[in-house]
Length: 335
Figure (cartoon, one colour):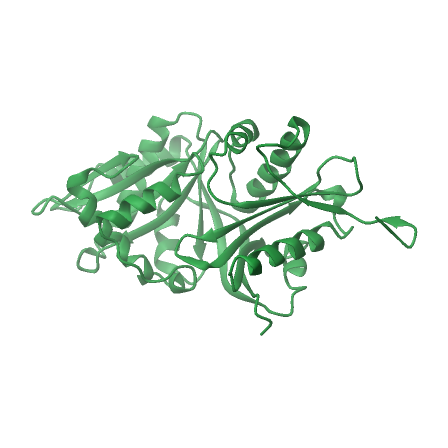
């Protein structure tokens, strides 16, 4: 389409199951590069393309954008519902460097907002890098607010870090036993693991990212299904109370074929806090990821900058600060 003598970007719904192989390859390259810059890690492009082609990447709506018709894909967007609240959409939007400042991002976001509203979503969340170009682009909406300032950190699984993790994992507090599992939680631990996960909301700012929910065994199984529906593999580090043999602390990570694993939630039951369990379950998890997945070079995690306790835990585990991100939310109801 022409506007005043120039070609406007072309934004189209993207169906990876029917797209041409060249478009699918270009879409996944743009997506994984953007995701890696934003979150510290991403799946391999060929791994993502295979899952998308086979329809095994979970429920989502996707778009592709080009600078002009019959040119390569240079902008991508993906909309998913937040696991904890179907009324909230989560947007991932990436544009290649050469295609920026040409209206591609704005048109992609417009298409996403329209789809989100049509599907009954009233809020749209996303994470953006602080500073340019992500923050000014996000703030173009008058209905956007910043929920949290986040710090992206990486723990490189090099020899000094692994030695530190071994030191911590080898010295659990008296009365506790460290363990881990890959995939689904063992049946005998599912209920107590759910009780630990129910305390995720205790962390500063967590209520802005998730809503209170029951964590019975059925909910744990549904959560496991959702966090692995994109093909990721789940690894959990945990601490058990030796008297009850039940989970009292846990941390979660997901692993793809890429070199960086994602470290997610960490929680400790209130009665068992201030005993070094958080650092030790995270140390156990890092060691197990290193053993099980030799291709993983680092663990990446995003932490609310107000969560000083977890920042201190990560310093003890030799995490390094990489960048600052913002969790932003846009109202789709116009106020």
